[in-house]
Image 1 (cartoon, protein in one colour):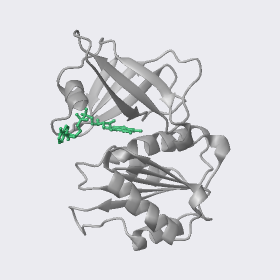
Image 2: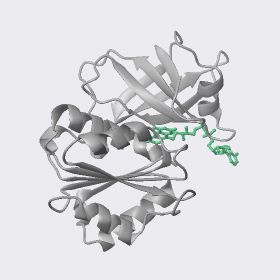
Image 3: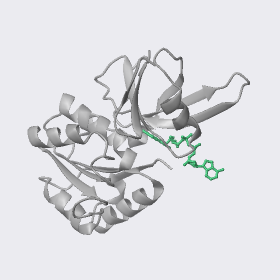
Image 4: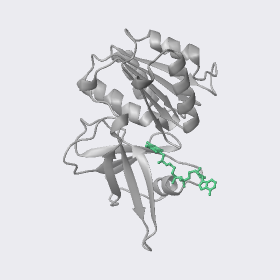
Length: 226
Ligand SMILES: Cc1cc2nc3c(=O)[nH]c(=O)nc-3n(C[C@H](O)[C@H](O)[C@H](O)COP(=O)(O)OP(=O)(O)OC[C@H]3O[C@@H](n4cnc5c(N)ncnc54)[C@H](O)[C@@H]3O)c2cc1C
């Protein structure tokens, strides 16, 4: 690990130096393995938040889970200089590269934003002409990840739009059919690729809405964090 820095009260960025022969695709994840001196091991998956164009290091955003074994170790103990076993990159089906084109519909809930963030960063770096809209559901602005970055991108990057659904703040919006149709109306054509990521319940609800909105099931890819 080469660096750590807080993202929100409960999410921390950890940067790792890697010597992979080829870079990951945006959206892929790593398997992180901790081994205790007595040989006990714990493995968890973490999506890569940094884009492939950030060569030599990968950033993981780890949310502290209540009584979570691995996330608590990271938040409370892990420090720059620690050797941590990372395997990967894995998860090719839930990944995007500029050559895949768009338009892109990205739907994320909570820390499910992480792989979508990598896609948006890669789009900005290598394919700014690909139209994209992100629907991001979080409880509050304070809990939302990287909101400053997302709002700045929406303001300054032509062809990218952000639709925010904050369930415990302001108008208390949740992802629903109206919000999805609002997001779709911001794309110049129906999405060629839809990526949905979050908790199991969130992904199921969002996938149902996407299918009900008429998006072909074969264009929708999902990833469940738990
Ligand atoms: C493909 C993929 C990508 C992911 N990417 C990310 C990411 O980018 N960022 C991120 O933060 N997470 C991500 N996750 C989730 C991550 O892998 C872990 O599941 C998460 O960090 C929790 O791990 P933990 O060891 O802290 O918690 P765990 O120890 O696994 O516990 C998880 C929860 O279950 C509860 N629990 C544990 N044991 C019990 C028990 N016996 N009875 C009842 N409840 C119990 C704990 O209180 C805790 O709330 C991803 C998951 C997948 C599959």
